Length: 347
Image 1 (cartoon, helix red, strand yellow):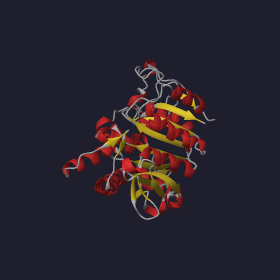
Image 2 (cartoon, rainbow, N blue to C red; image 1 turned 120 degrees about the vertical axis):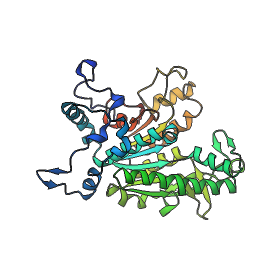
Image 3 (spheres, one colour; image 1 turned 180 degrees about the horizontal axis):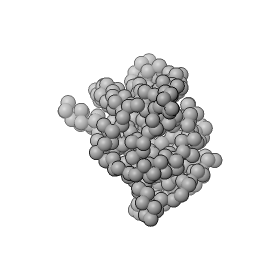
Image 4 (tube, rainbow, N blue to C red; image 1 turned 90 degrees about the horizontal axis):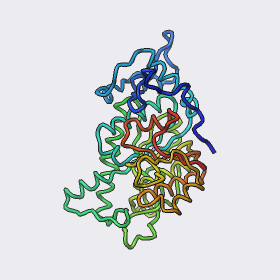
């Protein structure tokens, strides 16, 4: 069991004039590419670090004294050392996808984490975009127990929007920010093989994941490229299926032996009292989260997310976190601070 055992060297306090953690803008403080006029030997890092992120985060950047910027970097160092070279799978959706400001925050976080040596895999859905395009075509969205009922015409739109539009837009944003992103879907390279859902007669082309072959991903993440994966897969006959993005992220994390699985959500995390946002459970193990589910404290849309995390942990992922995607730079808060940005579940 791994807990967050690497605290900041000194706590943030008002007296210290240290910026509030919610306003930390790490990307501005990416290290220089050259030291003593010698260029960093890693060509990816050189390319990544010399590309400014200010086009994404410039409107919110505050000017901090040099000593404060150095303090921020020095206190992030233990976390960078802990996760450097480790695979981190991030599932992206919800408010963080709908808001341009939050989207910019997520992209900046991904690029920074990749620049300091973390192997990022980015999995996305795109429900709002799908609904928008269904509306343009006069097709009414239909849901059953939170899952999109996907007939043949809806599946065609799902594939076009997720793979052709949302995926390439995210790839473009990451590339513009200075990293190298590669857009894929579960269909590419047999990455995800689907099977019909047990409720296929009601849900249509909504699939479960039958198998994962991460071979196509390994050369990408070994070279610190960022795979951006749309949650569409095909069965052995070539029929496409709509796959829940949380499920896809969890299965990919397990297949890659990821250090962390992170689900960006529209809630603070797992709450001890669903009616009290202040009752956030910061850390819990599998046994504890199962008890909360049995007691009815984990319910509704949180159940499939928790189940996804538990399943990935059971298959070897070290930790799984459900974090608040409504917070700017929530990924940096989760990975580079001891505070976190939601609930971390351990094995």
